[in-house]
Image (cartoon, rainbow, N blue to C red; front, side, top):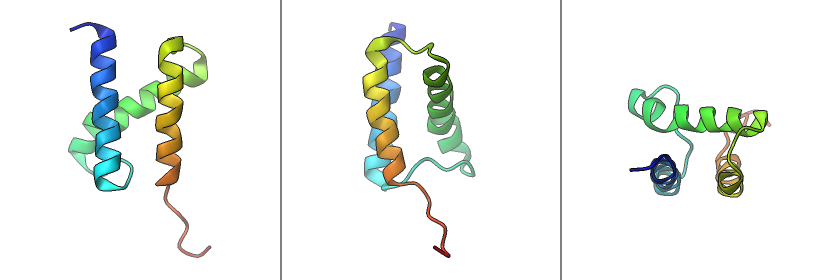
Length: 77
């Protein structure tokens, strides 16, 4: 399995998790943090640093839009 195939597989897993659970991965759940949250954070850092491969940027930006949709709200707003 190539690096690109592994990245796409993890991408599909994260998208599937968000669509299924209608929420972002939790930092408090050990399994979610290890599987999804750390991957999201690492790729967000790569994107911000300009080190992400161009073919991945478009897909990852769509994923970030999806995560914004399920962002937590302040209960007092």
